[in-house]
Length: 214
Image (tube, rainbow, N blue to C red):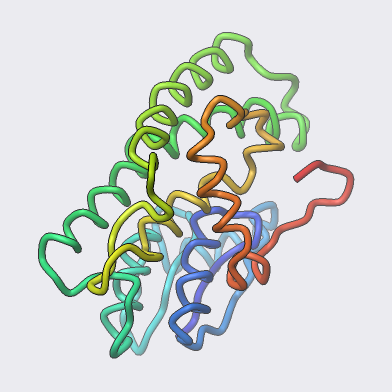
């Protein structure tokens, strides 16, 4: 299997972490999103021109959550995506919640406070920063309340444990420091995130940008 990815992408990171935990072998094809030639390679497999993209024996699959689920489906005995219908639905719910609510809030702050200055598009737009902060506060509070008394976001078939829900949400936070997205008010989120950061898969996919804080 081949995965078109970039180590700075939170969407790609959640897929790579999933593969590492499952022991699924992926050949990583790193795409430089500033390179016209690499962009052409990417568009050839994904008309959306976005990463990640998985290519597996004729199957071309984009969207990180779909790829994560596909990898689990192909791994016998895996525990990241429950077999129980209700438990799996709960994991799916949190994956979709992240995609629809949490990730866009972080994305706004990441774009304004980190990416725009990095690529020379000027400083942050105060109105957009304010909007991103409000959305982050709204949805981080939801996650914080849910994590009260919990180590993990959802349950495996064997009980509370690491699932795709944790990997999906945690990857979204990888640029929180650079995005100036403070988690200080959310004690439960911070405790959960600290646990995720101890995972071998997290450490092996750490992205370090010279001259920038983590």
